[in-house]
Image (cartoon, rainbow, N blue to C red; front, side, top):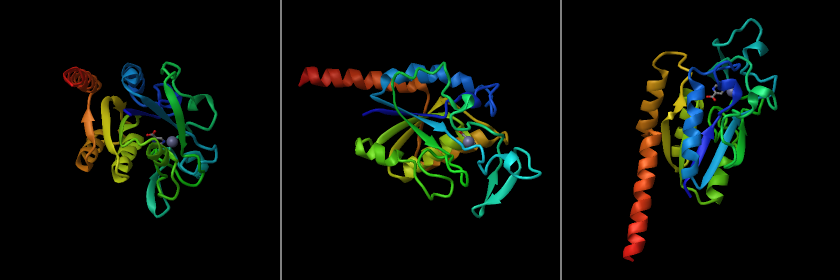
Length: 221
Ligand code: VGL
Ligand code: ZN
Protein backbone atom coordinates (compact mmCIF):
# COMPACT_ATOMS: atom_id res chain seq x y z
CA UNK A 1 0.00 0.00 0.00
CA UNK A 2 1.52 3.27 -1.10
CA UNK A 3 1.28 5.45 2.02
CA UNK A 4 1.56 9.22 2.39
CA UNK A 5 2.16 10.93 5.72
CA UNK A 6 1.21 14.63 5.78
CA UNK A 7 3.11 16.29 8.62
CA UNK A 8 1.64 19.21 10.57
CA UNK A 9 -0.20 21.04 7.78
CA UNK A 10 -1.82 23.22 10.42
CA UNK A 11 -3.12 26.78 10.53
CA UNK A 12 -0.47 27.92 13.06
CA UNK A 13 2.34 26.88 10.68
CA UNK A 14 0.90 28.78 7.73
CA UNK A 15 2.08 32.37 7.09
CA UNK A 16 0.23 34.62 9.55
CA UNK A 17 -0.16 31.74 12.03
CA UNK A 18 1.26 31.70 15.56
CA UNK A 19 4.42 30.01 14.26
CA UNK A 20 4.08 30.79 10.56
CA UNK A 21 6.70 29.11 8.37
CA UNK A 22 7.84 31.17 5.37
CA UNK A 23 5.99 29.93 2.27
CA UNK A 24 4.42 27.16 4.38
CA UNK A 25 1.13 27.46 2.51
CA UNK A 26 2.89 26.61 -0.78
CA UNK A 27 2.95 22.93 0.21
CA UNK A 28 -0.84 22.57 0.41
CA UNK A 29 -1.35 22.39 -3.39
CA UNK A 30 1.48 19.80 -3.50
CA UNK A 31 -0.37 17.63 -0.95
CA UNK A 32 -3.64 18.00 -2.85
CA UNK A 33 -1.89 17.08 -6.10
CA UNK A 34 -0.23 13.88 -4.87
CA UNK A 35 -2.96 12.50 -2.57
CA UNK A 36 -4.80 10.74 -5.43
CA UNK A 37 -1.67 8.65 -6.16
CA UNK A 38 -1.73 7.03 -2.70
CA UNK A 39 -3.70 4.07 -1.37
CA UNK A 40 -3.49 5.39 2.17
CA UNK A 41 -3.13 8.99 3.39
CA UNK A 42 -2.29 9.69 7.05
CA UNK A 43 -1.73 13.02 8.76
CA UNK A 44 -0.18 14.34 11.94
CA UNK A 45 -1.12 17.30 14.08
CA UNK A 46 1.16 19.05 16.51
CA UNK A 47 -1.11 19.03 19.57
CA UNK A 48 0.19 20.76 22.67
CA UNK A 49 -1.33 21.43 26.09
CA UNK A 50 -1.27 25.16 26.98
CA UNK A 51 1.21 24.45 29.80
CA UNK A 52 3.67 22.83 27.39
CA UNK A 53 7.22 23.07 28.72
CA UNK A 54 8.58 23.94 25.25
CA UNK A 55 6.56 27.19 25.12
CA UNK A 56 8.73 30.16 26.09
CA UNK A 57 5.84 31.78 28.03
CA UNK A 58 5.98 28.88 30.49
CA UNK A 59 9.56 29.82 31.50
CA UNK A 60 10.24 33.00 33.48
CA UNK A 61 12.29 35.56 31.54
CA UNK A 62 12.58 33.45 28.39
CA UNK A 63 11.66 34.34 24.84
CA UNK A 64 10.92 32.19 21.79
CA UNK A 65 14.19 31.03 20.27
CA UNK A 66 15.96 30.83 23.63
CA UNK A 67 17.51 27.47 24.46
CA UNK A 68 17.17 25.73 27.83
CA UNK A 69 18.35 22.40 29.17
CA UNK A 70 15.63 19.77 29.55
CA UNK A 71 16.00 15.97 29.71
CA UNK A 72 19.77 16.42 29.63
CA UNK A 73 19.78 18.12 26.23
CA UNK A 74 19.47 21.62 24.84
CA UNK A 75 15.89 22.36 23.78
CA UNK A 76 14.57 25.34 21.85
CA UNK A 77 11.66 27.32 23.27
CA UNK A 78 8.84 28.14 20.85
CA UNK A 79 6.02 30.66 20.70
CA UNK A 80 2.68 29.26 21.82
CA UNK A 81 1.39 27.22 18.86
CA UNK A 82 -0.95 24.34 18.02
CA UNK A 83 -2.62 24.31 21.42
CA UNK A 84 -4.90 21.26 21.43
CA UNK A 85 -8.31 21.93 19.81
CA UNK A 86 -7.51 25.62 19.17
CA UNK A 87 -8.19 27.24 15.80
CA UNK A 88 -4.47 27.24 15.03
CA UNK A 89 -4.20 23.49 15.62
CA UNK A 90 -6.62 22.70 12.79
CA UNK A 91 -5.46 21.29 9.49
CA UNK A 92 -5.32 23.97 6.82
CA UNK A 93 -8.81 24.52 5.41
CA UNK A 94 -7.24 24.46 1.91
CA UNK A 95 -5.97 20.92 2.40
CA UNK A 96 -8.07 18.19 0.82
CA UNK A 97 -8.93 16.12 3.88
CA UNK A 98 -11.27 13.61 2.20
CA UNK A 99 -8.59 10.93 1.79
CA UNK A 100 -7.05 11.26 5.26
CA UNK A 101 -7.80 7.95 6.99
CA UNK A 102 -6.22 8.63 10.34
CA UNK A 103 -4.63 11.55 12.20
CA UNK A 104 -1.87 11.09 14.78
CA UNK A 105 -1.33 13.72 17.48
CA UNK A 106 2.12 14.51 18.80
CA UNK A 107 3.63 16.75 21.44
CA UNK A 108 0.67 16.04 23.72
CA UNK A 109 2.80 15.64 26.84
CA UNK A 110 3.46 18.91 28.70
CA UNK A 111 6.88 17.71 29.83
CA UNK A 112 8.46 16.58 26.58
CA UNK A 113 8.03 17.67 22.97
CA UNK A 114 7.76 15.38 19.99
CA UNK A 115 9.26 16.55 16.72
CA UNK A 116 9.13 13.06 15.28
CA UNK A 117 5.76 11.61 14.39
CA UNK A 118 6.99 8.30 15.88
CA UNK A 119 8.55 9.18 19.27
CA UNK A 120 8.86 12.08 21.69
CA UNK A 121 12.23 13.86 21.84
CA UNK A 122 13.32 11.80 24.85
CA UNK A 123 12.28 8.55 23.10
CA UNK A 124 10.13 7.67 26.11
CA UNK A 125 6.78 7.25 24.41
CA UNK A 126 5.66 6.44 20.91
CA UNK A 127 2.67 7.85 19.06
CA UNK A 128 1.36 4.51 17.83
CA UNK A 129 2.26 5.27 14.22
CA UNK A 130 4.87 2.51 13.83
CA UNK A 131 2.50 -0.09 15.25
CA UNK A 132 -0.27 1.13 12.96
CA UNK A 133 1.97 0.92 9.87
CA UNK A 134 3.20 -2.57 10.78
CA UNK A 135 -0.32 -3.81 11.40
CA UNK A 136 -1.26 -2.67 7.90
CA UNK A 137 1.93 -4.32 6.58
CA UNK A 138 3.21 -1.02 5.27
CA UNK A 139 6.98 -1.04 4.79
CA UNK A 140 7.46 2.15 2.82
CA UNK A 141 6.21 5.66 3.56
CA UNK A 142 6.27 8.97 1.71
CA UNK A 143 6.52 12.05 3.89
CA UNK A 144 5.89 15.73 3.22
CA UNK A 145 4.97 18.73 5.34
CA UNK A 146 6.26 21.14 7.96
CA UNK A 147 8.84 21.78 9.05
CA UNK A 148 11.72 20.28 7.05
CA UNK A 149 14.28 20.97 9.79
CA UNK A 150 12.19 19.61 12.71
CA UNK A 151 9.20 17.35 12.33
CA UNK A 152 9.91 16.13 8.81
CA UNK A 153 13.60 15.53 9.59
CA UNK A 154 13.02 13.60 12.83
CA UNK A 155 10.11 11.64 11.41
CA UNK A 156 12.13 10.54 8.37
CA UNK A 157 15.15 9.57 10.52
CA UNK A 158 12.95 7.58 12.91
CA UNK A 159 11.21 5.87 9.97
CA UNK A 160 14.60 4.66 8.73
CA UNK A 161 15.69 3.70 12.26
CA UNK A 162 12.53 1.62 12.63
CA UNK A 163 13.29 -0.22 9.40
CA UNK A 164 10.80 1.48 7.10
CA UNK A 165 11.81 2.64 3.67
CA UNK A 166 11.17 6.38 3.49
CA UNK A 167 10.90 8.98 0.77
CA UNK A 168 10.56 12.72 1.43
CA UNK A 169 8.81 14.87 -1.18
CA UNK A 170 11.04 17.95 -1.20
CA UNK A 171 8.71 20.54 -2.78
CA UNK A 172 6.10 19.46 -0.23
CA UNK A 173 8.28 20.68 2.67
CA UNK A 174 9.35 24.07 4.00
CA UNK A 175 11.86 24.85 6.74
CA UNK A 176 11.82 27.11 9.80
CA UNK A 177 15.53 27.93 9.19
CA UNK A 178 16.42 29.39 12.59
CA UNK A 179 19.85 29.33 10.99
CA UNK A 180 19.91 29.86 7.26
CA UNK A 181 21.66 26.54 6.60
CA UNK A 182 19.22 24.38 8.63
CA UNK A 183 17.19 23.25 5.62
CA UNK A 184 20.25 22.11 3.64
CA UNK A 185 21.66 20.38 6.74
CA UNK A 186 18.35 18.57 7.29
CA UNK A 187 18.30 17.25 3.72
CA UNK A 188 21.93 16.15 4.07
CA UNK A 189 21.16 14.25 7.28
CA UNK A 190 18.16 12.57 5.67
CA UNK A 191 20.08 11.58 2.54
CA UNK A 192 22.99 10.25 4.65
CA UNK A 193 20.55 8.10 6.64
CA UNK A 194 19.13 6.54 3.48
CA UNK A 195 16.01 8.67 2.99
CA UNK A 196 15.09 9.03 -0.68
CA UNK A 197 14.50 12.63 -1.70
CA UNK A 198 12.34 13.43 -4.69
CA UNK A 199 10.05 16.13 -6.01
CA UNK A 200 6.31 15.63 -6.41
CA UNK A 201 6.73 15.68 -10.21
CA UNK A 202 9.35 12.90 -10.00
CA UNK A 203 7.01 10.93 -7.75
CA UNK A 204 4.05 11.25 -10.12
CA UNK A 205 6.23 10.35 -13.12
CA UNK A 206 7.61 7.25 -11.40
CA UNK A 207 4.13 6.10 -10.32
CA UNK A 208 2.77 6.56 -13.83
CA UNK A 209 5.76 4.69 -15.27
CA UNK A 210 5.35 1.76 -12.84
CA UNK A 211 1.60 1.73 -13.59
CA UNK A 212 2.36 1.39 -17.29
CA UNK A 213 4.88 -1.36 -16.53
CA UNK A 214 2.33 -3.24 -14.40
CA UNK A 215 -0.30 -2.94 -17.11
CA UNK A 216 2.17 -4.09 -19.77
CA UNK A 217 3.31 -7.12 -17.75
CA UNK A 218 -0.26 -8.21 -17.01
CA UNK A 219 -1.11 -7.89 -20.73
CA UNK A 220 1.95 -10.03 -21.57
CA UNK A 221 1.14 -12.58 -18.87
C1 VGL B 1 7.47 21.77 14.81
C2 VGL B 1 8.83 22.88 16.28
C3 VGL B 1 7.86 22.83 17.26
C4 VGL B 1 7.27 21.19 13.44
C5 VGL B 1 6.49 21.70 15.77
O1 VGL B 1 6.12 20.85 13.08
O2 VGL B 1 8.27 21.04 12.71
N1 VGL B 1 8.63 22.36 15.08
N2 VGL B 1 6.69 22.23 16.98
ZN1 ZN C 1 5.14 22.11 18.35
